[in-house]
Amino acid sequence: SAFFTTLLPYLLKIIIDYSAHEYNFFLNIQLPFNFLYLLVLAYATAWLVNELCHWTQNIFSAYLMVDFKGALIFAGLKNYLNLKKDEQDQIEAGTVISDLARGSSAFGEINLTLLLHLGPIIFQLAMIFAVLFTTISLVFSISFLLIAIIIFLVSFHINKTSSSLFDAMYQKDNQVNSHLIHQISNSYEIKVKNAVPFQLSKFNETLNLSITTAKDRNKKIGLLMISQL
Image (cartoon, rainbow, N blue to C red):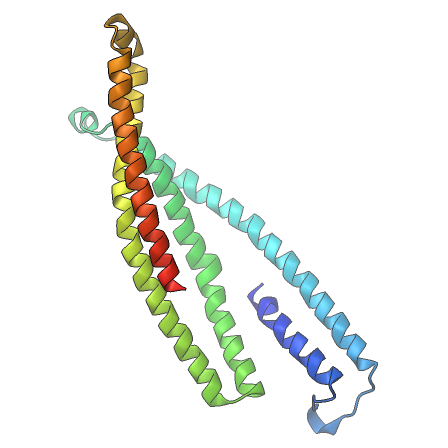
């Protein structure tokens, strides 16, 4: 997939150059103009293979993601059940469920990034370097790589800064989930004590605080992403 993604724009450049009679083949071979159709056919074939690779990768990614998430959820429940009773009592059910859901998604994303994104990106950079070196110059290709590395470092710094903003949102989400589970688990007692309006009022305060925090953090994260542009 990385190979064909890099190949496509290069093939398009060759087609444009050849149609303008500016492409020089090795050994000064002069090919007829009909050769342009062969190049177009090559581009169409490369595009088709690229799309097939892309969607095959998506299927493979979905398989891996489900496996990663399932493995972490199973391991998390196993670790929880192996805790002592007094340790379990200190952990709220809502917190466990929320952390397992977010943790399993994050675990899957990290592994997919390492397996299906980071490796292909390095491969693509190597191909782009080779293409720029052969079509333009060595200085241009080195400059391109240096700028790409600088942009990566800036993006990494911004993402690291934005990740800290999620902590407050996760904490408020855990409070909402814990409060919700508590209300549902004690619904009969709440009804008997005629405390429905009071409990709804308390839950509404927790919910509004979570909403306010989420809006504030998302605004800051959005501004960081805009600064990255």
